[in-house]
Image (cartoon, rainbow, N blue to C red; front, top):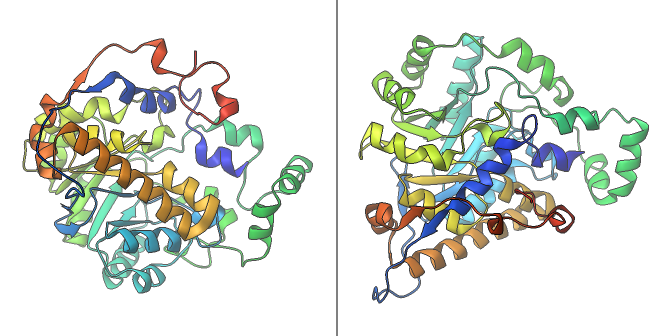
Length: 381
């Protein structure tokens, strides 16, 4: 049940599969005899802050659902790797607690809430907690139709139906983790809001009519580096720059919102062309390998967010699991850049368009029909 919540996409999960498979259509045309040697320089800047890696763990809701350490595990991993940390406004760990763990670059993610006093209060807490940047999520004005959750009768906390009790018995490690720790709340908003009130709270606070004027007001309240998260169109990116956002965050919410929304790696080059070379672009969506990160950087991203890979690590092993997940991606990215013949992130970004070429997809790109049994979640034939 919890795995399906983490792993699932919207409706028929076409966008979810496409988000992963789109990378298979991008070939890496490498240079030889580049004269570089390991370790490579993976340093860059995100939101104007120096980081040691050009990728980071995306802000995601309810991390304690997967492991008792929750968001603190990802913060420890960010500190270990020297990269950006992102905290969701629907986190189960408070801003102050995160600030005590990691004093490096941090971005606070915010939804389009109705209550402006609530927004002001949360923004003030984020500033006091040392968060350097804001990310406004704009693709969550309706709650996506995640049919695995409906099929599983998913709820937070569980409803303790017969089916859920059977699942809990079959997953004793998760059940022990859940029962042996305090119930969690959405700590960045109001510790009095229990986790099982998420749907009601979201429905009461989400503001579907939130528009560009509201975004201008929000930017004025924050008065610092800010990203608009959920951009998939060049014209929207241009409008966001004109409105005052410093960063475009190309994202389709992990393919969990609008079914058949485009793969973010497909729209990334057009957004880079629209906003020019000087506007910061972050991209997430479908990233599962270091080669995926290399392709995104080559095609216009300044940095890359990862979601599911680090959440799998969190569920498997808490902070060590997240550290390991990010380390796997770091090693893979270092290898990919070395084989491409690019020794720095700046070099990869500069030479990227000539290194990545698209070709039509092939059935050979995807696993056979037994792939799910082996744990592969991408396209099948």
